Length: 280
Image 1 (tube, rainbow, N blue to C red):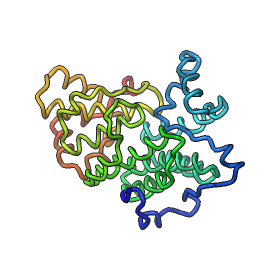
Image 2 (image 1 turned 135 degrees about the horizontal axis):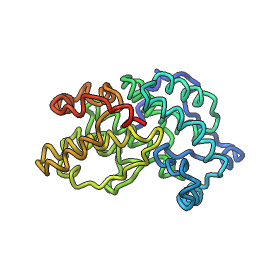
Image 3 (image 1 turned 120 degrees about the vertical axis):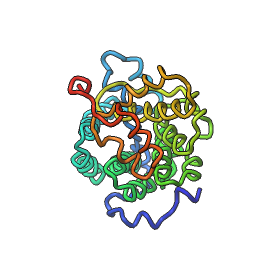
Image 4 (image 1 turned 90 degrees about the vertical axis):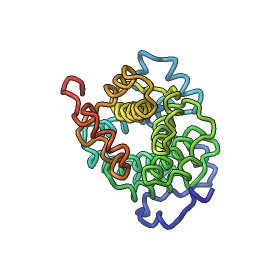
């Protein structure tokens, strides 16, 4: 697909953040992809939800050591971003990506980094990183590939490139925690309100690094309900869920999306951050 192979944007990436595919047998044998952080959410509940953790192991082939590493190394950095310190979170994830030598894990980390750059308001850098992350097709890691392409789709949609964004999403709109947030943003940017109202997305565990995605999905749902007049009670419930933790939390979404900016301005719940108790 031409949309994911553009090369000129990659020039902004430092060499150490380029994904170089290793072809030696030793590296192929040891290459273990990290799942996107939203699909690793059950890991943090491993003691309480053992079957979920075992399911992840069986589906992905990840070792328990890799799961613990993903949880301990990355989730705290995403919690920093959720708390407002995106600059420090970006720096820490960038250091992890620079040190990583496994091309699959590096692709995953660059995908995470692109999302942080997007949230920091650096959409050009975010797009370049997202394109770099999808440059090598992850044939044996469909979950990883699906998430990386969906992340790029969201970045493109926010910049107004909705046609290419739609092509990057899985064609079958099945609820999927890996792609739900990008899909809902792309649909909202496209004005596909009826589909959004009907879509039953997966809420993520309300834990570190996950809450922001839940608020974004609730925001898209609320916007769709308002456009279709699908019920004041439902609308208020999603407005409550979308209430930001930080006053500027949705700025990166609305900066080039006048319709969303107007929607946020017209709903006080979306202009004021949660109380200290709600943010716990």
